[in-house]
Amino acid sequence: MIDRRRFVIGGGSGLLLGGCDRLNNSPAFRGVLRSAEKLNMGAQRLVSARDALAREYGEGDMSPVFRSNGTSMPNTDDYARHLEERFANWRLVVDGLVARPLSIPLRTLRTLSYRTQITRHDCVEGWSAIGKWHGPQLSRILDFAGLSTRAKYIVFHCADRFGDKPYYESIDLVDAFHPQTILAWGMNNHLLTVPHGAPLRLRVERQLGYKHAKYVQRIEAVESLATVHGGKGGYWEDNVDYEWYAGI
Amino acid sequence: MEQPAVPSDPVEAEAPPPPPLPPRTAYRHRLPTRVWHWVNAVVVIVMLMSGLMIFNAHPRLYWGQYGANFDTPWLHFAGRPFPGWATIPSTYNLAAARRWHLAFAWLLVAGLIIFLAISLWNRHVQRDLAPRAGELAPRHIWDDIREHARLRFPAGEAALRYNILQKLSYVTVIFLLLPLMILTGLAMSPAIDAAWPWLLDLFGGRQSARSIHFICAFAIVAFILVHLAMVVLAGPINEVGSMITGRFRVPPERAPR
Image 1: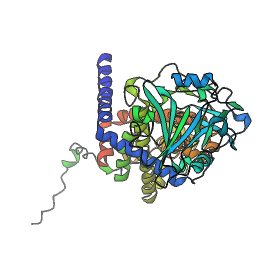
Image 2 (image 1 turned 180 degrees about the horizontal axis):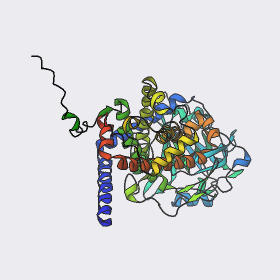
Image 3 (image 1 turned 180 degrees about the vertical axis):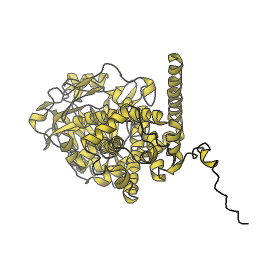
Image 4 (image 1 turned 45 degrees about the horizontal axis):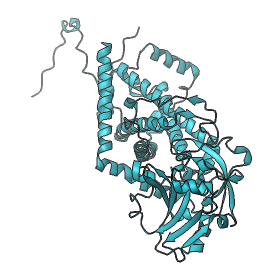
């Protein structure tokens, strides 16, 4: 009797799950689910002021230990050399659809006026950590370079690789010119450590953690994401189907 | 042609009582209620199962603004606590679970808003769901609990109205748990937190909102289990049928004891 009941319950659950898994494997159904991303982005942008600030916390609210995630040590010879040189020769390249392509030495970036913000980092997995970040606003760097009117997205090319694939991320101009979007060189009153993206990482405070590209070497202004790597705007977007818009 | 009057027959008085009337049916659930019930049945199950997959990605819960591996959780599971039969999809896939969860969330929100608008307009809320004067008296609630515990369900006219325990559980789900699920879900969005920072204050931080999200989800699971048990005990064919067709076969009055 119990076996039969278990069989029935198991069978029912199996049928339901089999159905859901099959739907999940159907490109048409996945297309429907994926359309919710645009809806989420549209709705969130609709209710948000363009420059609505993410909450900034006080010193007393900071996480005692800010865990890192993703790459903790980029495994390329190039990065190892930079680390050995303590990033003395690290440069940030700004190119693509800009009037003045730049190659800014890290030490120059660190002399720019910078913003300090204590914000909450929300991982797609569900955890949050609060930390203090220091760095110049991305908008200033983009203004130096002079964005073309054709530019719609800013792509961040990173020094780390997942397997044989380079990490990259991208945001649109609403987030690129947001006052809290900074290229952080410092965290919690110190220079960035390697697990947190030394020597330079993006902070884009209204989106989830995987958008906050670490080890940033190059910023490229593009009109479309389709021609960059896998075409979906980021490593996770290309490889595991995370949403490009990670506002929720 | 006119029937001649039947002369009163003394034998008639001693005949056996007439056979019982065929069971009376009554219209119990209106169309918007029925549509929302079944849409929500699917949506809530999908939300629960995809939510459990998302929870599996970080099976710890915290109170406050922040919370991660080095902080102290109030609930902590090792590994991935929810098995494949309880999650969508059935194998670990955070990205796919988020796609399901964040798409079906729209159906949950839209369904609730439309149902509430219609039900206020057709007075379902005021007439059927709102407790009446006297129903909230402890004595009345206690009597209803005793009736439920004895599995004596309302019959006759009383079966056409929600009893007070039904009202309280439906009101709790519709006006408390579902809105809390939606608001705590939104409070986990970094973009919405920037637009509506009051959400963080309302729940005491993003990690508190995540904890409340999980607690309310399990309160809804508890509701579903009790709800299903009551349907089975009260007569599943009549109950499920009335939620499909709207018509309910009224259980005859019990003989007084």
